[in-house]
Image (cartoon, rainbow, N blue to C red; front, top):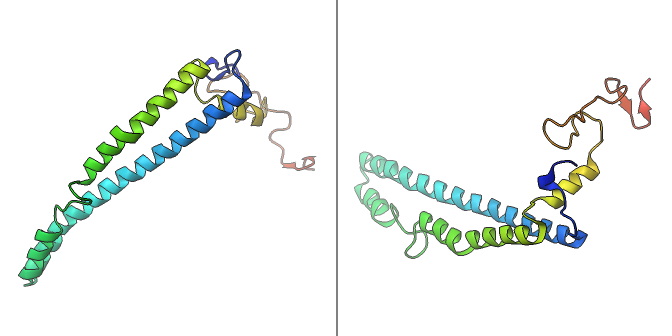
Length: 161
């Protein structure tokens, strides 16, 4: 592995690399949760705008009372008391996400010299096949010479034939 951004600094223990990997994994899970929160925000907004069409169609069908009830009770309604979805996203970002992101960055900076994804980089190095063109350590690395007989079909015991 000759990508210094992902090389373990001198003196960083296996336990530290594993702990930072776990912290990073937890942050990545939070990133996914945040994405779902944005999906919730967009889906709820789309549903609210579709209600405008439902109101028009109910009126056109002669159901003025139902059209007015949908408009008054549901269109533009808070999803939780006092909040539209954008406010939930903002509160999540301000209260939880930003603090988590800042702490993870500070831990990587302090404990690993700012080098992130050390756990994954070392896992990649341990799992790659040196010399295989699809197992290079990083983009543009010269370690892409095809292995002998790489074009021949292979069986678990070696080349087929």
